[in-house]
Length: 289
Image (cartoon, rainbow, N blue to C red):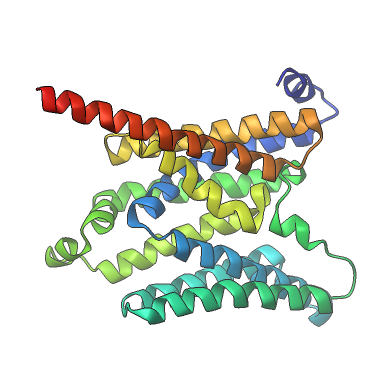
């Protein structure tokens, strides 16, 4: 970590500062949206959306370089595909049954297949590994602005619909009985999840973005006593994982994305053991009382 600090203060290495700032700002989105994803138990749906993103990225590259449509960038293609996937999944999830599992699997595998095919037929060299596993060290100032806009949008939407979103996550039937249109609210949650995934893929990549979206919230769930506290702890953990991952990867000259996820995974496994001991201790104290 000392080496990372020395590098951060080096004026010739601005990309490290961009990576750190973006990672800390991204933690806000990961912590807030990740909490809803974990509490609502839509991890597999978020995973399907994240893998569909590759279809949008590949399609954007193809349309931009082959068809000659300059305004359709890979990021814009990814946003469009992710929102379409969220709309489709929101519609299908209301029907339930086996069809929901089937459509999730189809979007998960089909999205990646389409993306790889588009990349394969696009002239020039495009490294799919940079999209699959990300590279936070390639962050630019424009990426920082994207994340700031995303954070502001998420904070605004969650602030306005907080009570309804919490009610949707815990008891959808009761929320619907109170006159809330849960279908549109659920679609809103999936769209926010889709935007979070798309705009933050640069940090850990398509394959591992779902891990950083859910693991901090899952760990926070063993310590928090409420949704607000869970969001706060998940945000802190996300920032901690990103900063520590950057430090370790920089010191050992390793890819930053996998290191960040490995740290988060190990912390999650440790939290399972400590969480179990904590629950047993709490139950024992309650029985004594």
